[in-house]
Length: 184
Image (cartoon, rainbow, N blue to C red; front, side, top):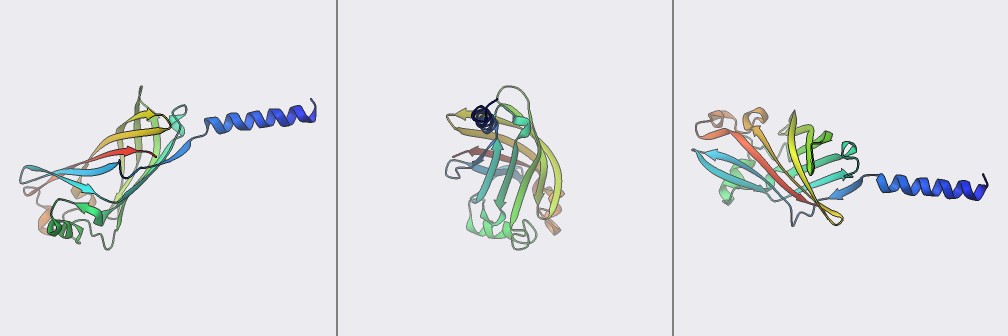
């Protein structure tokens, strides 16, 4: 094979590999959301996190090679009242001064049918890391993607609500984290 053919073949192989490589997608935070829903005195309350980042290394042709990282600013929680927001940032709840970020880092993303993925990874809140698995839906729109998921957790697993707040008769232990990530 002539040198020019080898160069051309190598170039084509490089383009082919680049076309199948995952693309790191960043969340469009203006169109994305992360919230937590829980019950206080048996009444559902939704808290939204105003500051977060999400980075998803994703290629629909090879979803098993995908990776995701989400970082949430714990002090950015908005329960709808400035006084409550200050309260949940305190030591008994999120302890945002000592643990300013809650994070999720995937260890596995598997295809689970058309437009569906199963995600496994480490969720770290308030210094406590646990393994979690949850379903994720994905929709493509041009070069952008929308990822939607729901992750149920127990707040006491992460020491959210210490001291008198460990009593689940006032604030339930069950919390549902919902996220809607639209990429740029």
